[in-house]
Image (cartoon, rainbow, N blue to C red; front, side, top):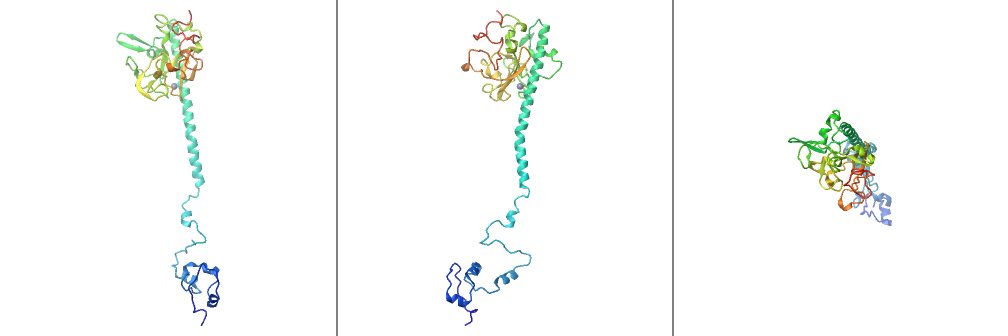
Amino acid sequence: MSSGDERLPAEPYSFGCSDRRRESGLQSPSARTDRPSAGRPVPANHHRASLAARPAGNPPNVQTENSPGLSPSKAKRFPKYWWLVVLIVMAIAGGIPAVRLQQYWEQRASCQTNLRRLSTALLLYAQDYEGALPPTESRQGDVWRSWVEMADPYKKGQDIEECPSNPAAGARHATLGYPFSCSYALNYRFFGVFAPGPFAVENVEIPAQTVLLVEAGRMREAGPFGPPASPLAMSAYFDTAQTPRAYPSPHDRRMCISAIDGHTVCVRVAHYSPAWHDPMYGRVGRNVYNWNGGHPNGDTGTPPRE
Ligand SMILES: [Zn+2]
């Protein structure tokens, strides 16, 4: 009996080595990891024969039990310059907030420029009318005219009536209904409040703390911080607590205002609800008040100089 003819069923996971197997000339336990041959006779030239039987253009399969992992085809799915793609995505994501921030500051600066020029136009108007500002609206025959129209000759043709963050195009006056495409409202207390007719701005006690113009634009849906919902707009500024919808805060919950002395500032609307009234009645923010610099007792019914 030749050792090459006697083939016993292989026991691939058995590391026991019987005398009979040694006699039969079977492969050593390390070679028995060749599992496809389990249970079948394995000729000595098994691997060589299988390679020869494979077609020439077909590469051998390199994935074995002992080397699990990605095949070459899966590895090729990752882009070669994946890090460059990540860098581009990060640059775009980081650039969007910067663009928005720049737009915010540009619109806010443009709004304050509008207010400064409108204030200049109103003060030039006052020079020609004995120090008096125009009424917020006046009737000439059957036609109502707003303060914007009366200040028009002093604006020198500048398009300064709309804040870029708070467009008032197509808006109408809140009560009278005429077109009022202006983002700003005039302090109404300088005409017909303290006495019949105008009140000269030179009588204002603290011009730097007295409001001339505030942002108004379109009315908001729910207070000054809600979205613009109504086509109505206010031409007159009464008080932040009286008609809060007339005082939108389009600049990141702030609104730009100008004082009688001509300086402009962006303030938070802190006191716009009667429920939150404080003794400094009419204050809109940063020591700027609604008409006369603020009486300590909150009185708004008497003129600044008594
Ligand atoms: Zn504005």
